[in-house]
Length: 190
Image 1 (cartoon, helix red, strand yellow):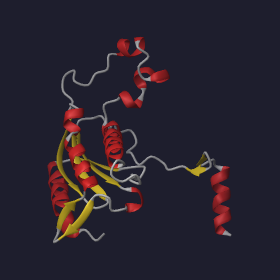
Image 2 (tube, rainbow, N blue to C red):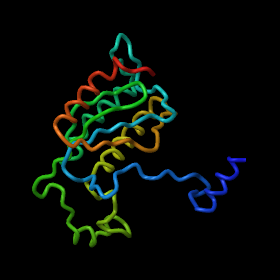
Image 3 (tube, rainbow, N blue to C red):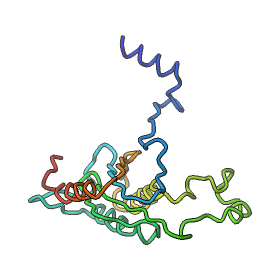
């Protein structure tokens, strides 16, 4: 009975989109994810499937797909000049990593007139989120790149649709998260 009441609530308040339940944003409201700072990221595979390898003797042994995930994580600073990577670990079914955004000078400004004249960004012009230099753009690129390359090895490879982030606020938190990442293989319980 409760199940039907709950379904009625979702239909009444239109929490369905294209006949699927909507998942609300996990992002911190009113935070600019393009702001300078350190961000702790966790990205999981779909259904937590172990695509990236196995842990043996408290050490991560990367599969071919895991090696791709590592290679593309290392490419983030080459692709996004305002980003660098700090500590990270590829685990059997997820990735933990710290990304630093450090925008300085004119490295990341969009030329609005140029965007409008070339119809860059579609109907939203320079407000298109894909043109914004922020954390979501980095993760979207990363997940897309890994998916494209991984499906050449395993056609069933798939990510969980969202990712988890945590804004790192001070040096103590940064140090604690770096240790957590470093010790993750020893603490992994699958």
